[in-house]
Image 1 (cartoon, rainbow, N blue to C red):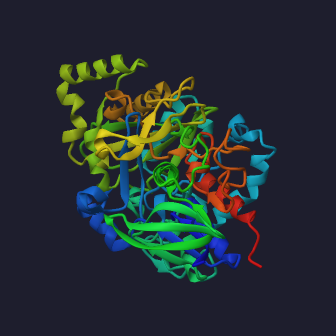
Image 2 (image 1 turned 60 degrees about the vertical axis):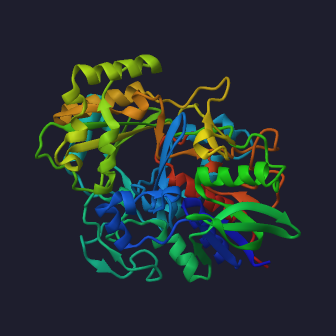
Image 3 (image 1 turned 90 degrees about the vertical axis):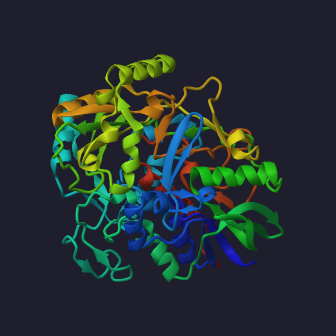
Length: 525
């Protein structure tokens, strides 16, 4: 065998897995379809987002931000060494107790809250968690919003994985006794979501992956695993160039494999292996059945003051809980997110999708100037405040693998609504309520994402599930030890393994689950 373990993907699950398996003495390789992203790449992405920020191999775009649009949901994420951590807002929150008690995964004899607690603490240490020390204009507006919604007691700074040292000053590694890379103090530029070019954000290439490589893990970038094939004593992984689908690389072999390519990457790989290449026929028929959007909605407010500037701070620096199952954060957008100005339109309250679309169009016709204010706004980035509204609620979509017109009739992922289940929402009344309260506090106009209001698409940066836990292929895809049911030595350790809506930013939970999964694998003898 070429390796003891191959880890497919380098996000919060893959980064954790790579380090812990290497520390246990295994020969480990990490396969990442994206590339290494450095400060120059981040700067280029801000200057020319279309060319350098977006990941779209079919259009020869080799950036590190991806947006995937299905019939029922639009999903954003990261691609590159570090996965979603490259473009996440560095928010590290533990969910409320309801998440751990959710019956979808609490009936297997595991006290998840108690068992995950030490792993949460370890991830916090590794990712340098600290409460955000900065309070600026956008935070003040969100605090007023919380007060208006009767939730002022829940308002506070977000716990962030950011090095808040002296702004702009580079120091020797402050987190791992000098074993990690040099770090630079956060300059409060608000660019976290398009990558941190300053070296302040604790993305995975600054900790788990850096240390894994230093301890001997081999990292192979710009490689995509096309399918996984069982063989005597392990698995063979077939590799291709993600930018040139017809170009292949020599396959590699491993005794065991950890799939951690994110929900879409892991599901596509398992579907393709099971249904196209027929190499993993025993993978559960429930694959992709239970997919979560974190029950999210995205809303916004555009300040009417053309000289407003809310950009000072990290991307997300404060939050609150308007009720027991809802969590709200503010967002500062970087220059690379300028495309979002075209996604925002008038705010409309209407649970019926057809009526909501009609009312949105009518609002655009009735008041076109106000409806298109976001598109033509000067200093848009300095004036726009976006709220992410997340819930721990039982709703879902499914992802299936079939032929489609937009995939040139090749099999690919498609969304559908599972029968008899509550669909993941495209309209959250409490999100609109929060946007209006924020607009009132800041002197702005509340806005909806038109993909939600016109097309009835859910929006999420936190797609979860698809490989929910069970005891057999008849009721789940993976075991509580993250092993694919029917395939010993094949694991899933990313967001696909999260069976319920977390209700807060899920990065800490994904990493803690991966820590637990790796802790249950014995050290190499």
